[in-house]
Image 1 (tube, rainbow, N blue to C red):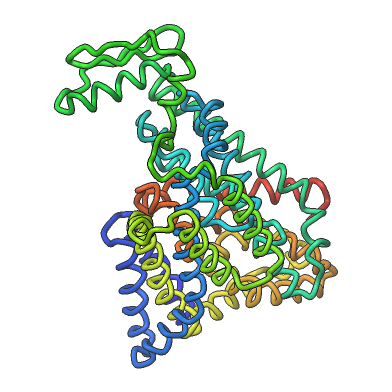
Image 2 (image 1 turned 90 degrees about the horizontal axis):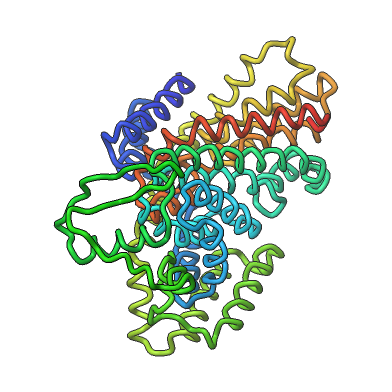
Length: 472
């Protein structure tokens, strides 16, 4: 019964948010509360919620102060050189912009933190997508998949959990998986190219002059509507308004590049004299995070306090920076605490345990010698519907025991368990995904509908590559 109710609760949640019948926060709170009553444990709802909040409180604190820290670093110009480099590559070509999104997300993911990756990627790329009227779910989907592949780094979390659960060395799990993961990352780049070409066909390729003229006309005459767009033979789009605007053809290329930036190069918050201090502080913070010198929430709390004090010594300026990022902080932290209700009920009522046991029990005995393949396939739905902790510490040991009985090594099982991470990063139980959709102003349901099929395909590509290379 608990198995059926568990799957029903998850399905109800996903259907309601994808159909936009409820907001994610409301669905994360009300649906599990309702199913907790159905299970007959409504009296213990408070305990389950508090347990969930206790488990996720450090994550919420980390996200709150990480948003402030990296938000201030974006304000003061730390990432402007990276952004300029990506923008020079992207120009005004939708295909290049989508590929650039994947490349940027993959590079920034090297720090092992999803929320950091999404904050930097969205801050850099969002203005381009908006200005060219590109699909924002393409941006969130590509960023999530690139980060999902990179999330398998030993300091990203899943690999360390698998190593701990099966008492293995993390390097023995990860290093042999590198070829398969590289194939998965290459597939994300190829998929980004395909999605970018699709956006290019929909919008055309604009020159910087055309985009800047379009923007200036919109600013001067907001009431004017677009009356025509024609595609020329060379693939470029000429955009014309009801009222003609000046072309500004005398502006040189460097000035146009300066104008066409995701981050305002003349904003008052820039601190060029403190650039190297901010850069070294960020490198030091990420190094301390990887080396686990202090808990991550503590590191970001200290980092946020320090960067505010040094870059904005006057209290009114500090308050202004905090207020500027308050909306993102509130949205993300609220979503995390709402997710605590969902995970608290799933775990407290025993639904997760029953669902995992049922999925293990339905595996035919003939599949025993192929338990690594089975584990790789199961990692897709299981890491999507439950936390990494629940999967790696609750389900993987059971699967590994079944595999060991048929001669499948724990190392193979551990490697196969990493396959589902590209899909996991878009799970409603992953706090970082709310940073992504919140900053991109994308409905979570729209993101889910777009990304699930492509992320699942990426997972299967990694699994296939792992089997082809003899890794799994």
